[in-house]
Image 1 (cartoon, one colour):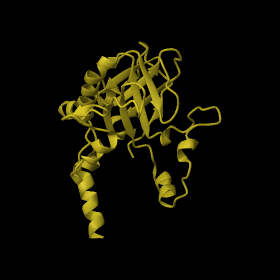
Image 2 (tube, helix red, strand yellow):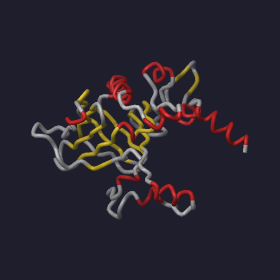
Image 3 (tube, rainbow, N blue to C red):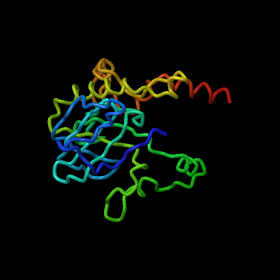
Image 4 (cartoon, rainbow, N blue to C red):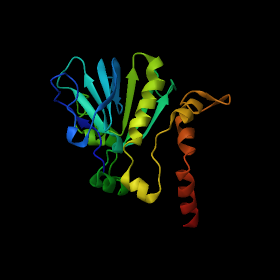
Length: 215
């Protein structure tokens, strides 16, 4: 597993994220005034989003010990969402690979019921970041979404999945042309495109269907 979502409590002397300079990590883009939604929790804001060559890092503007980070290898998908049925504000929707081997075993045995509820404690605070599998980034300036998304795509391309390359699989992100044609909640050839339809367009679903039919 690539690591999943992690808590960030330390900052650099300039107030930004502490970078992994040994692996040549650098900041590619800074987006101020961004809210963050982890799973089904409430939006946290205001904050600043740092897109580095390795990770997405969100740091709270109010609480200097509150922040979150996820590396690009843990992002299984990201896309622009303007579907108000999914979320009331335009945002970047992401899916995170945060499930370890033990969790996968629970799911296979059908003993992981209520897993989403267990992410939050009785105060509504996330107490297990590894189980967060969805994240929304909600900029105050919705017009910044397209540029922000393109930066995510460019940096994600710098971090190809080694296992995916060996198996001939692509990454679950959509480049600018694809997103402009298939914005979640947007229009494509006058037809409404939603998240489920966008995912079904991925050719790997065809492979999965073929394998099931062979069985």
